[in-house]
Image (cartoon, rainbow, N blue to C red; front, side, top):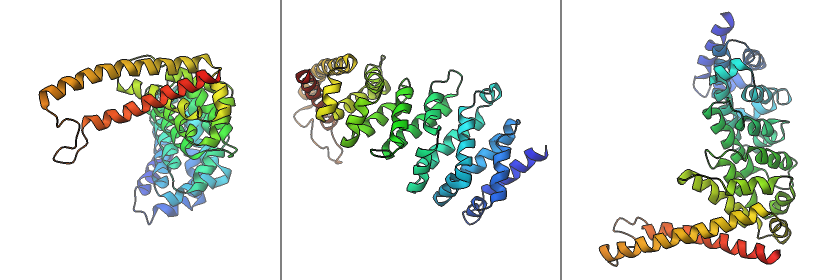
Amino acid sequence: VPKQCSALAIMNLSNGDMDHVPEMARNDLVLETLLKLMKEENPETRRNAVVTIFNVACSDQNTVRLARYRDGTILEALVELVGSDDPVLRTHDEARANAAETIFNMSCSEISETTDRMANHAGLLECLAVTLRGEHTGLEVKMYCSATLRRMAELIRHPMISQGALLSALVKAATWTSTDCIAEAFRAQASVPENCVIMAHHHGLLNALSRLALTRGEGPDVEKVRMASCLAIELMSRQDEARALLSQNEGIIMALTKASYGEEERDADDNLRMSNMSTLEGSVTGFLDASGRTSKFGEEDEGSLQSRRIQVALKNLVAAM
């Protein structure tokens, strides 16, 4: 009970104004206390300790202090909570969700030292990926883990040492299709030309990316996963060395072929629908309306452009065979 009350009191203090919260981050005794409380068996005590860390980390200047503290001890405590297979923690997922949210918020820091320390923290990226594969892990935890991997993929690039760990994590996380975060993480990596050859050579990456691009199912969310994955492949195919490796992967060729034919069928349906709409609504369809909003044609032009990019990529890969 004393520890539970202490955790609650410290959490309440962390909800104070920004003049007081930075002081907590600079107080080693407070940080040491929170580290111990985060490992308590009582789920409410753990949760309150993690929420305190979350509140402290809401001030961007504090994220560096938290990431630095005792060479990443606080980061390690958060990672252990997120990735723990303890049956009690699976029953009381609140602390895990709060820890995952804290890691995500810290990854959104504008201070490069914070994100660099996170990227280089041993096991952090792998933990996020493995957690996404957990059968008993709550959806909220997985959502924050996938969002953090996407954020880190936007920050890590060649020649950073952490890129290898990131790519390995993305390969493991490629089973996650409930959101497009992992597919977009691959796309973010491929948007940097220097990354593309490294990605193509990374063990298992092309197979993982092709499986994402071939994700089964219907609906806008699934389509976002497929499209982001195909666009990542398209970006990689612009580099000669990467193109040669892509052309040798059966899954990659199949994904682009399916995307190309699928887009053609949808374009035919859209053209027929638009033709009917034009007949009914007149020639004004497809221009800006009086309020200046973009018409539906503008939206479809982007989709058509993406489709053409994928088709050109397929053509180039076939030529490279």
